[in-house]
Image (cartoon, rainbow, N blue to C red; front, side, top):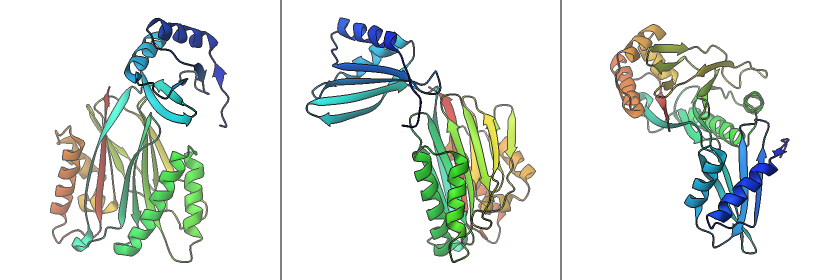
Length: 302
């Protein structure tokens, strides 16, 4: 819905002919593009007993010259099944998460999220409720749940953050949350960092470490917010790191943190997350004075 489509009748005929020649018979076929000309979608209608999915994907990939994937398959009743195929993204991603609570509390005021947004995007996020314990956890849980739901619905980042901010700011209690979001497009490797009251993050590349700054107020303080948004372009093997201020506070300066990351050789994002947390705890000699959370993401060519 809400998108102008362009239909490709020539591709429909070509694919249908190739399927028939290979003994794969479909009732109906539809090929169309969205706003992005490269965003090809192929929809097929088959009988409910159809189970040659791998063969279907292989034939259509050969016809289109693109590696396709089966995005969705739904039984729509009356003996019919609809299958939707889309181009496979160029990249995939793996993740790491590590955390420790203040004073070994059973509850952390930090909430993190790792979710796939459709076939070609991943979102990592940390919501850091002000303070620690149950009250902070409630605020961070609410903020991250709303953000996840709105992103899944396909809304734009500006509208999502503005809506969540208004919901928090009209609460009768003082409910503030620092939000750190990164949305990675697996089709082209672009990464959008959206920071609201969150500390700096990092992009770790083969040739060095880049600091991603953040300096706006947390959600829920002002009715109108202006998040810090930074875009970067990633290549296979690049790593992202975001964390709560319990981690950055332990390291002190962003330069010290970057120097520590520069010396790491870990390519596994979970190993890196564990190493960062261990170092932050070590630097906090009297124990963490805030909840600590670190989330890492590494993209790789498929």
